Image (cartoon, rainbow over all chains, first blue to last red):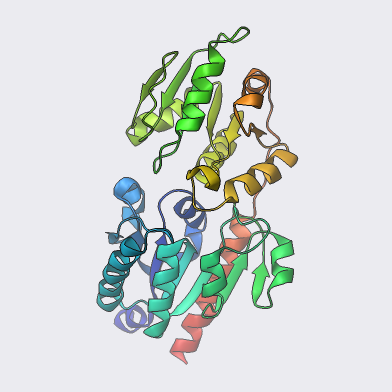
Amino acid sequence: MVLVLMSNRLKICLAASAGGHISQLLKLAESWKGYETCCVTTTGVVQEKLQKYGKVYVVGECNREHLLKVVAVFVRCVNIILRERPNVVISTGAAVGCVMCFLGKLLGANVVWIDSITNVEQISLSGRMVKYVADLFLVQWPELAEQYSNAEYVGAVV
Amino acid sequence: MIFLTVGTQFPFDRLVKSVDEVVSQDGFSDDIFAQIGESSYRPHNFEAVSFLEKRLFDKHIREASGIISHAGIGTIMMALDDRKPLLVMPRLKEYGEVVGDHQVAISRKFEELGHILVAHSKGDLLDRIKKLQSFVPQQRTNQAEVTADRITKFLYELSSLRKS
C-alpha cells in the first residue's frame, strides 16, 4: 500500500533565480509539503536555504543580455530535466525558471508560474512566454489578471 | 547603526558613492556599516565589506536602526519582515545597474503604500536619510498562505487525476 502511494506521489521541481525570486517562491513552501522535490537555482548563495527541499542544482546566472550564458545554463537545465523528470515545475522566474518550465513541459510536466511582485505594470518577459505552457499562472497584482486571459490573481506573496 | 547593502549579485557604485558623499555633509551623524558587493567604489566615511556571510548579514539587518539598499525585492522582504525602516534607491537600466526598470516600479508602488522611503538620486538622498530614523513603515499583510493553498489545491487535483 505504501509503495503504491509513493509511486503515485508527484515529483516537483522548484526553479527560481537566487535573490527575490527564490525568496518569493519559498513563501509558498507549505504547498509542496509532502511531495518529493528538487531545486534549481542560479547561485550557491541560496544553496543552504534550499537543501531541506531536496537536491539543489546550481546552474549559474543568466539574463537576456548575456546570450552565451543563457546557452550554458540551458544545457545544464536539459541535463537536470532528463535526470529528474519532474511531474510539475513550480517557478517564480526569472530566466532559469522560464527555461525549466519549457523543458519540463516538453517532457510532459505540468507548469505552475507565479509572476514576481516586482512586475507591477505588466507581466515579466519570462512570464509572458511561460503563460503559453502554464497550467496554473498566478499574478500578484489584480490589474494584471485583467490583462491576460489565463492569469489568476489570488493575492500578493510579499 | 544604519546598514547599507547593495544585494548579493551586482555592484551599485552610484548608491555607495552617493551615500558616502552625503554623509560628510552637515546634519548627519549616524554610524553606517556597508556591504558593497562587487562595487569598485570604496567609501571614505564609513566601514564597508564586499560580502557578509549569511548569519552576519542577517545579524546586521536585525540590529540596524535603519537600512539603505537597492530596491531588490529580497531586501525589501527582509526589512518588512523585521519592520525595519528602509530607504531604497532603485537601480536603473540606463546606467547598466539592472536589466529592466522593475525596481523603479516596485519602489514607487511600495512608497505609495507607505512601506518604504525612496531616493532616486544623490539629490534627494540626504533628505531621505534624515527621515529614515523616524520613519515608521506601514505594516504589510500578504496572502502567501492563500496563494500556497491555491497551489496545494492544484497539486491535489493533479494527484487525483493520476490515481484515476
